[in-house]
Amino acid sequence: MFHNSTSWGRHEGLHREVLKEYQKRIRAYEDERDELESEFVKESEKLVGSLKAKKGDAEKKLFSFSEKCFDSSEEAEDKWTKKVKGLPIDKKTNIVFTSFWKKQCKKVGMPV
Image 1 (cartoon, one colour):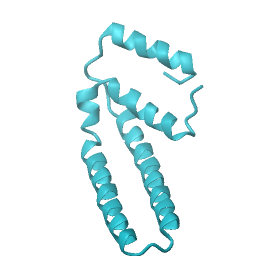
Image 2: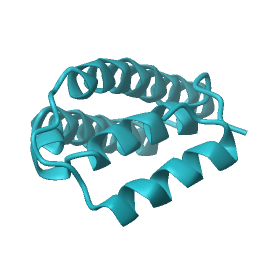
Image 3: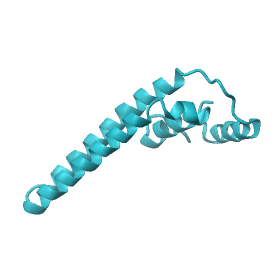
């Protein structure tokens, strides 16, 4: 069952909103998404480099970094979902495509 309180549920909600008019809606946040992902990669490379030099509390640092990434992702996805939902749909998707996704939403109890 769908739960908006899970990481998957929040991301899937954003994904399905974007699919309603992909070309337009992805542009609403793709630069921010790419920048956030790039920051995660840079920070992880720095962290791994520093952990190679000193063993110490590596597990604690890695956990803290992962937690920070998940928190940042959740905050960003919430912002992007609101932004995308606020965009008008100018070009309707194919009826077969729309029907398929409505059925998928119904199967998992996800709002359409």
